[in-house]
Image 1 (tube, rainbow, N blue to C red):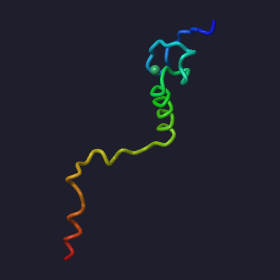
Image 2 (image 1 turned 60 degrees about the vertical axis):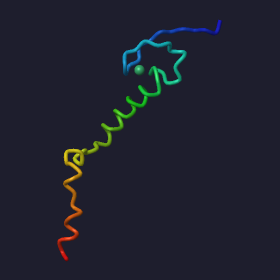
Image 3 (image 1 turned 120 degrees about the horizontal axis):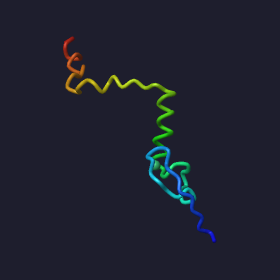
Image 4 (image 1 turned 180 degrees about the vertical axis):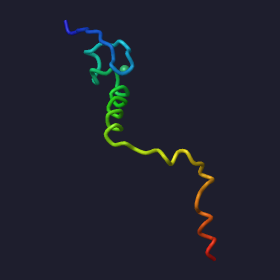
Length: 68
Ligand SMILES: [Zn+2]
């Protein structure tokens, strides 16, 4: 009898899955594991996302030509 089953809920997505079938326990999948890992990583290194609130059209390239 090799088919052990233990149904648990993934701590990330709350999906039920067989504990023994997941390589990524206690998570159901690689993705959930990575999401959780990424979560504490991003808490550790607080990354600023200031670049994202500007449009690319607001670039500074035009400044280079001003001097001449
Ligand atoms: Zn999951």
